[in-house]
Amino acid sequence: MRTVSVTAAAVTAVIGAGAAAVAAGRLASNAALRIPPGGPLPTEPGLTVHATAAGQVTLTRDLAALRPGRHGLTGDGFHAVVGPVLSGTSNPADTVVRRLERVTHGTLEPGDRAWFTPALHVGDPGTALGLDHTGLDVPGELGPLPVWFVPGARDTWVIAVHGLGTTREHALNVLELLHRHRFPVLVPAYRGDPGAPRSPDRLNHLGETEWRDLDAVLRHAVDSGARQVVLYGWSTGATMALRAAARSEMRERVAGLVLDSPVLNWEATLRALAAAHHTPRPLLPLAVRAAQGRTGLYGDRRPGAVHLDRVGVPTQIIHGPDDAVAPWRFSRELAAAQPNFITLHTVRGAPHAAMWNADQEAYEETLRRFLTPLM
Image (tube, rainbow, N blue to C red):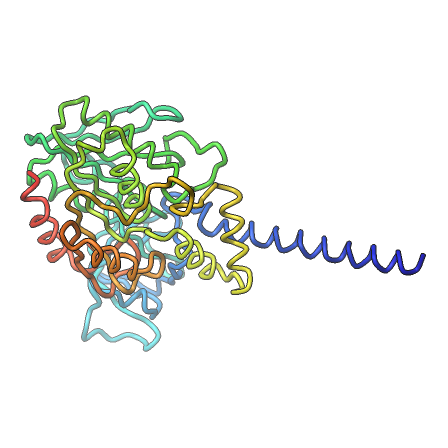
């Protein structure tokens, strides 16, 4: 009886440990699968506002606070736009002074917690940029999808799709450029976004199911007169663009792809986000397995799956080695494998999906050169 009791206790302990490991893996996978739209990524450090003055804001000294370029600065109840680090200012060694371009809404007060966001604008194309636009509801797989439509004269349309940790306001960064070159532009919200249907499991599938909402918008563009379409995506929005270009019944109308900080390997991205969420290293494989079990994210290893490394249209990748979410090496490898189709523009010093923010002039020139032949 004693032997049986000891054995039963050992089995119970093993089962308990296994259940704890499964629970830990599930919790760790939330770092990628439950990122709220517009919320900070786990890789984005929190900063403290130390002071504000005319045209200046003083922040905690951190590598994030020293990033080049222009960024949104957001926190509880406020959004602002900050420019480059200001030199020659008198400030403590543990702080950084940046140019404060504007406060979009709310107020910045000493002691406020804040983080950088790539989205410079808040609102819609009209309120943020003064652009005429129409709000549409495009029928999607799960229900109507809110879409901004900014008209243009060309018959090549652009569909601009945001990614992790942002909303469709992110696309406002480049909307003036696209409008200036007379492209009609569609900017959709998709499942899980404010105003859009929820995913049935309330999880982010890193583009694996969300691409079908982009497909619905692509079909709408073609039905509305687009001769051809450029799919422009950031982060998992870039993954959605790749999926649509490979799988959509409308794929013959896709003339080109613009992929900013593309998530090309979901496992690497999930590991990066889970690690940034302070998940112990031994639990990272459990986070991957939990994500697979919760979402069916088996990617290109499934029989008959569409491979993301088979691009058949002109593609511009804009990415950099400082991206802590979507490793740059996958973009490098993809571009090297298909030099006839893919061009890689490298941006240094930029976090995930903030390539435009780090060097707006070079980014927009790269975009102009790519889009010109597709007009």
